[in-house]
Amino acid sequence: MNDNARLVYSSDPSKNQNCPKCKEIVAACSCVPEEAVVKSKFVAIIRLEKQGRGGKTVTVIDGLPKQELFLRELTTKLKKKCGSGGTYSLEGKEGLIEIQGDKREPIVKHLEADGIRVKGDFKR
View (cartoon, rainbow, N blue to C red):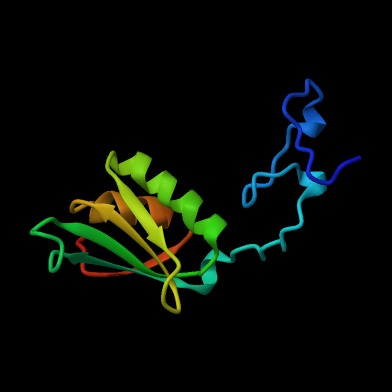
């Protein structure tokens, strides 16, 4: 079989599983598996930023593990929970998530419910 061939459609559920990183079929995926994130081994630092953003407020969550799949999933959950936009970044030595607006309280509640320790400038 040709190595460049990709599955277009199949009714077989075992063939419909794609790798979350490269979007290839799991059987043909060549990605290095990421280690599972241990949520008790890091502390998320929450802060509010306005400078350099045209007066817009952004809630920043810093000190996260530098694993793309974990950051992507957590960013998606937080954006849905807060009802706003956001992004994640792998630049620097740690992972970073930015959520638009002052959303510190719902973010802290969600992270603590998810088992992630949190510190920063917020009120409980």
